[in-house]
Image (cartoon, rainbow over all chains, first blue to last red; front, side):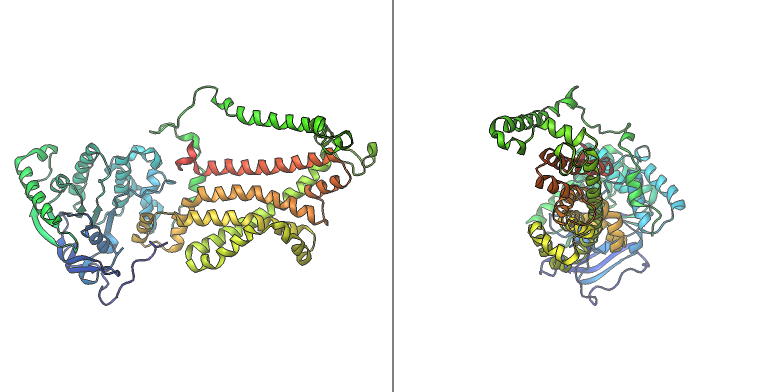
Length: 265
Length: 302
């Protein structure tokens, strides 16, 4: 029940951001967030993500990365600065797949379309497309308990894809998967990104995952979270699996790792 | 809002269609199906043996009629269709037909009481899940209702509402209500936060969340509550019947009548019959619950 309501917020400090934005698909400017208990979560975050950009945040645990995504989605409200995004066009992939166990894969994918009032007739082709994009079409009649962790995550992705959002928020979606499943899903996510050309904001604790997926990697400091480093990732898409063993890849990963160690101190 | 019916979708999927699934339920070694009946069978045999022992050894000759041997009970109360009043000195008569009539009357009371308890229980649990103050306001009294010996209440109910059908139903409701409310509420409020956030992200109203998320998620808990309450409603019907001596006689009143006229074969028969009803109802709701949730619920799959 505690999850029903967003935290109480001073309306004057957090302007309504539901309107369609002009300019960037997602933009934070000088955004700060202090929780009601006084915890200073985020400090002066300025960041924009356009369609066709895939930005990844890395940082120490508790640095406010997730809070930033929650602010973008409207689950939390910031206390200063601005957040501009079209809330009707957000796909949010949680760390847990949060599939409804009593629904089949297909019915799970239908859920978000249902909530947005999409009628049954126009829903079917959208659901088919999403399921095919993540390779779950042949498993659509299964229940979540019959799926592996990777398949659950794919179903969760397909669910977010149904409404074809412009902005995708990923809160460490592959953190619970084994290395092989994770790399495979990284490949598939990149294919999706190139196919749909969305604006992606991704959180991970894996530097390799961050560099492999992103057009840009941002390093955040420990709480209160600030952006302390900003790297453009120069590799062209499509990125092959073996790019991970490239010298340039290793060099960039090393720099990020160095910054991260600094952020922990 | 949506053309999809949650309950329909859950109900029409049979467990049998999972032939192509990745996870196959474990299959025990052959003969396991029989072996699980060995334990209960042994206990039952010990019980029947103790019964005979009581009759033949523990009871003096003058008191043997208080514990008639099981086969007499079976014969007089189950295998004899009708013993008219006065036959062989019987003051009450008896036989299967009479006991079945009493059982049917009690079944109606129990079923109606359970139905009303379910409706009130679900409504109350829903209200309590939506507002903490409703929970705070009602819960202590539900606990009190549960803790109160229902027998102590029965004379008051009789004085207030008479000694007829509806008083018996009321006793059933009072005894069956708490497990439904407690289990339903537990199910409704135990949904993980992440699921609520998913629904909130997409603008789901409280009612939509209840319908698409909380009720389906609570189904295993709700059925646990139903199963307990169904058994209790039979107890309520028998107890109410035992005290309220107007209207159609139920199985409880038959037990009382037989007892007063020392028709102990018939009395034990009636007791066994009411126990069988309780067991049947308990098992029935267990099977129903598994049919509804076992295709998706992890721990019910064993």
